[in-house]
Image 1: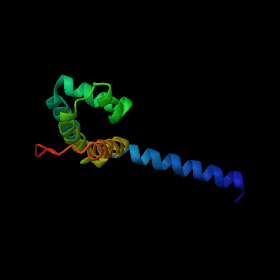
Image 2: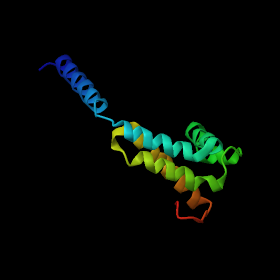
Image 3: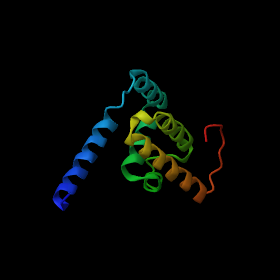
Length: 117
């Protein structure tokens, strides 16, 4: 097999793997569960989640757009996403965000007050 043929085979394999990854059946009940959890957060908390995803934990808190006391609730919501592997890349993003929040909490010695952490 020549180099161009090998490259084409790798591209086709990668495309097939991506198609297979995105063809995983996602049940509507999974979507409803996440929507309910997001709705439970309320409008102000939802904005805080969006802010963390947009600019990160440190900057969100430093700018006053996210309150420290919201972090356990935000982590709880993100864990709901992590429970469903069918959400694909969103699961990785949620895991990463949880790790960033935990790192922030450790750095600033934030102690869990409720059972949400």
